[in-house]
Structure formats: structure tokens, C-alpha cells
Length: 145
Image (cartoon, rainbow, N blue to C red):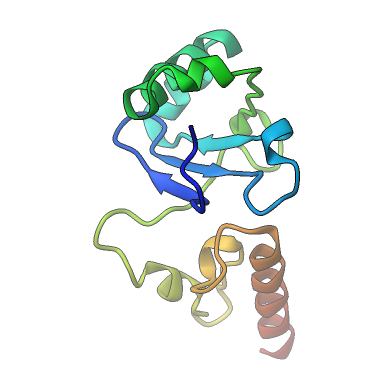
């Protein structure tokens, strides 16, 4: 049911950013993985539900776009509630509508104050690599100033 040559897309609903973690990998027809994220107050609310209820909400939303094929191909759900992680506590930065330049502004240094993380990178954001690059950039700045 997933469109050919599509790695990700945005949907209208609770799970609005959806991507294929299997995109570009071999044997995807045997191990196709769809990943999504939910943020904000609604994410906190739904994140407290049992895995099966979260899966049902997601399946119903995806079925609106792709029909019965979603449920017919469904195998299992894995839920990671990042708010339960001691050092992360659910933090995830994302730009709201019309905040295109926010990443660059947050990534700028202000005296001895600097921020680091994947969100601070204008290119290649939302990756572990960009979080590490940003951390290195901030550490170098602080060491030099």
C-alpha cells in the first residue's frame, strides 16, 4: 500500500509525520517498517494509552488514506514514549508553521550561552549525526570563548 519511491509524507491527524524506516533497504516487502511521531499535548495524552490502543488510533488514521491494505499488512506496533527517558524527558524540537529560520537562530551562540542538538542544524536535522555535529560545534565554541 505504500507508494513507490516515497520515503515520507505528512498526514492530517494525530500521527502527522510518517516515514518509512525501510525506505531504500533491500527486502522491504518482508520487513517494511512505518515510523511516526506524535508531539505536544495530544502526544502526551495518547502516549499514556496501552500499545494496542495507540496502534488502533494509528491504523484508523492510515486507513483513511490507504484503505484496507493498511490493516491487511499490519503485523505489530512498537511504542517508545520518550517522556519516560530520564535524560530526554520527551523533549523534541520542531518548527511550527512559518518558523522556517528558527533552526539557524537557535543554533547561534549568545555570549557564553549556546544550544546543541539536532534541531539547531539547518541542514540534516532530525538525525543523530546532526545532533553530534551540533554538540561538537557548541563545545568548540565554548572552549574557544
